[in-house]
Amino acid sequence: MAKTPTSRVDKLLSSMGYGSRKEMARLAMAGGITLDDAPLSDVSARIPVTPDLPTRMKIDGAALDPIAGMVILLNKPLGMTCSHKEAGPLVYDSLPARWRRREPAISTIGRLDKQTSGLLLMTDDGELLHRVISPKRHVQKTYRAKLARPLSGKEGVIFASGHMMLDGEDKPLAPAALQVITETEALLTVTEGRYHQVRRMFAATGNHVKDLHRERMGGLTLPADLAPGQWKLLNADEIALIFQ
Ligand code: URA
Image (tube, rainbow, N blue to C red; front, side):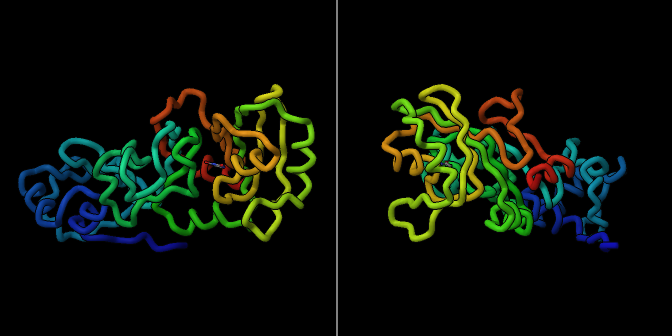
């Protein structure tokens, strides 16, 4: 069985973005850190970092943030960029501000374009991130595309062929499944994550994607009650759904 990791309290809280180790010492002296309802004044104490710590430790009276190993599902609004450093609104702005200072850092699992909305996963677990985006895993991603022009009827066969080439690329796209909703709306399920893939696929058929929204990754669907800009933490069962 894996050994429970331990950490100094000041190091743990600082890595979670609460402040510097000095600031954590000051907060503890002021009674701002409690463990199992008892004030914790010695921040050099080593404690086991168990998954239930957020239910046992309070910082300024509030439950401790989730410990490392979290997966966040965000309903990405239009106009936000999946980047740590670009100018303008970033997807990380949707999360609590101190989470920007967490180590390991939280990153998006793949990207959605600035003008694509919907299901976006973020994590601080590098191993999980690579597992989800690995081409070997074939995690299905389903997008709802609204199109500028009516579908010709040939797109489904082209996308499913396994021979479709995108401009400037030398490897054909893996087969993708098209489900036509109306003549200008379709669901497209792909297993790769190439640059602007869905927009480029429709562009290659002479069409133009006006709106793009990701609804599903693996067996995980964007919850209907999660408004744009809202997020939730995934539990272990929901994380497992990504690979279904
Ligand atoms: N394909 C695109 O073209 N854009 C996205 O954001 C995701 C997939």
